[in-house]
Length: 168
Image (tube, rainbow, N blue to C red; front, side, top):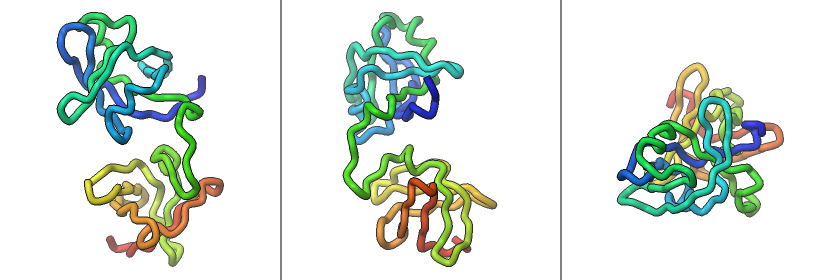
């Protein structure tokens, strides 16, 4: 299975209890949606392996889950640091003008005057709005505000046009 077919939704960050549960940093909204995907694909090294979620839930500000076959703390410890993903076709279809973050990563970003800023490395949430981390000759943080900052997204050409001052 190609890594290009996979969309990373989170990462296993630690252990929770003694019965094989793990802590998960989830990129889904809401965070506990990650436990609803079946199967989840776990990457250890370069290999993706399909695994079924035996149980999962929100826990405080995070998410915990238990995968089939990992019934104790020692077995679950081998999963720490593993990425969790789904096949692209497992994702819900989007309305026109909506995007998954994974679709935006790698897009070439330039401003309306044609100044090349580099490519979208990743995005993060701030509470007020999402932020693009664009890496080129330097790193830029650009708010993901459709209309006022983000003017055009062309997934076929892998380009994004922004109204952003090159000095920021």
